[in-house]
Length: 335
Ligand code: PBG
Image (cartoon, rainbow, N blue to C red; front, side, top):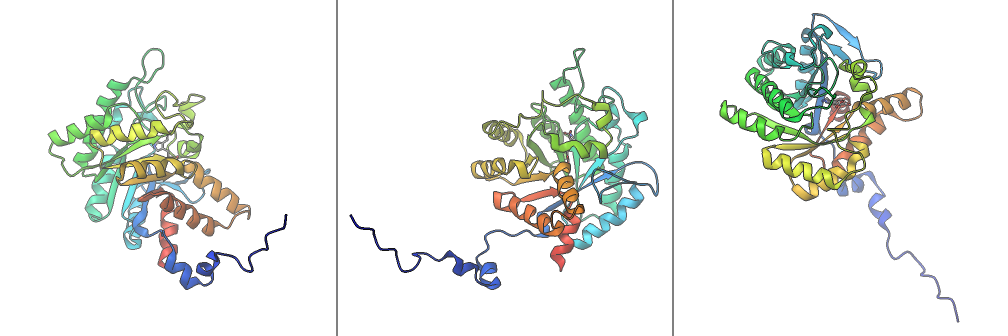
């Protein structure tokens, strides 16, 4: 028996294409652009009122007058869409969250003002009851505390219509009730809102990564130790995400979303491969907080990790990303 003589050189040299910046740029398969960004913002009542969200450094709850310059900045930077989330005054919260239907409530007023000032900036609103309910759940409860589906869908449909009437471009149901996309789509059609787009939070997991968001909208206290496991998806499931997406597309969603983002990139990839519809991912508050905290400690390079995380979404197949980094990313891309 004799040893085979080793080849005198490697059979393949993939490093050739990594040799210079120009070749790396030439063969790069995915890039992040400003067109990929949706910027989530938190609004509350009042004037000249800004409150820092402690668990999300760099993120503030803003009154409308302070949001307008932020929206203007987004227009200048070329960010396509702002996503609005309200921190509702506790005095307006009820078990049924009916403030969500108020045509002169915070969100409809902010939508009208934004569309008036910046008609070319896309505006998206969240359809869910959690900012409006005294218990912090996304729907109404029966006497046992279970979140009832069909009654909740009726209220959500009214909420979506209220936003459409205020002129919102995209409604994004994030509640995970069954049948809500179909109900909302039908109501929009019947009322003549044929252009209102629906971005469905189709695969939304019951995730601990939403913690800082609940601080931002002020639902953490109300929710207490309660969880959302009876409507949001189990983090152990993957095939179920495909079933949820299939249902939402059949019911009339124009775009679908996977949430959270980076820990669920496998789901983004499966959804994109299977359905080939516009697919979005949400880099949620906890993901943002982790990067911010590590960077603040000097453990990670803030900008490098931010850009790499966005690129990873693109590589996984996302057409766009909701991210609290949107303005930082857009600024970086301008350089
Ligand atoms: C509420 C909603 C949540 C988020 C978006 N819409 C939180 C939740 O479901 O409890 C989370 C966003 C984030 O963590 O950044 N319907």
